[in-house]
Image (cartoon, rainbow, N blue to C red; front, side):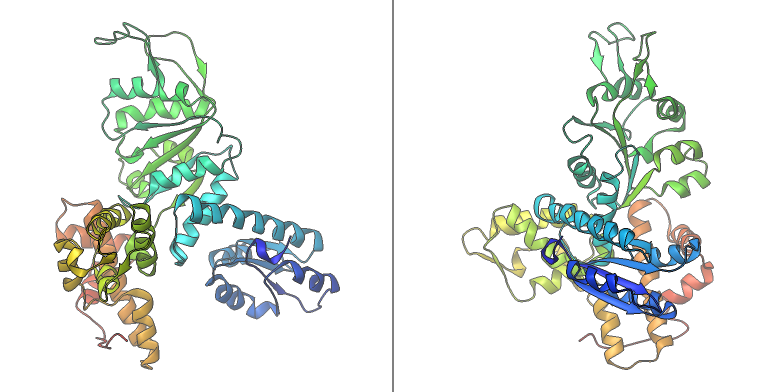
Length: 440
């Protein structure tokens, strides 16, 4: 182990400083010794960086461990040289996998949201015996995450990667896509066909848009996941399913379960390891580096950005998320082929208009920084941030529920944020305080 293998920070709560703890410092980027009371603050501060934080504690209370993990620690271990050494080695192995996601897969960015998603992908790849549930809005890269899990999964990566579309299936077609069928099994079955469970062999089977699967088809899928056996349509012979199942959806399945649109038992069978792909609204600081990465992929590696392009991209709304940003990058790369410069005029009109429309809207990190530098009271900062959070939630819901009226979206937002509908309207109207600080 050495420092070049990745940034690993040990934050230890210890009244007595063991000599061997200092000996471990040569293998990590930083070693912080603090008291038990300040441990959570230190973990939170270090987790805001790009490294892997290992919290060392002298208690095994589940609640304490849970709080530290929630604050961003990648591991929580007891004060033991063996345990800490193992945690450091594990963290550095994870960093090697995460670098692959950045360099080979293109999951670039340093926002907390995308770093968390990368680490969830690495964690999913390290647990090959469990199913994976990948959540995220349309266009956030759920299929890219699934391919990354397959590539990093040492058990399944040498075997096929197959997909079954759950969003456009009738019961008959879904059974055929998943289980396969024999010749003559139903009208139109002129040839025998292997389904996804057979084609995937010992690889990964992706159930794309699992949230769209009608209730009538869910019991058959549940049966497969429970028994890991299946029968092709028209056959009386059962076969063993040897693949790993990765389920993708842009719907909030826990909410669908509560609303009676998705079986709870099927959800729990799919929800082995969860990966949440963030929207661009949740990772605004990644837009510029991601745009440059996408430009490079489409032949614009040496292209420069005209003044104002980065600002316009960051201020625009992106309901189509990374998929939409990639199309803009393709357009810009094609137009900048001869000049080597992406101009504002090269951006689609819709992006420029969206940028103008949202220019006055506060953007997460930079907006908070501006308020802090302006020495505004904490209650004003909290009020302004909660207003922005409500706006972001409504934008998210408007994309996932395009046919719902404003009042319905507000009702959903209130339920998901755990507040009253009146609170949502108050935040949208700037109550109880209105903050007006110029962005710096």
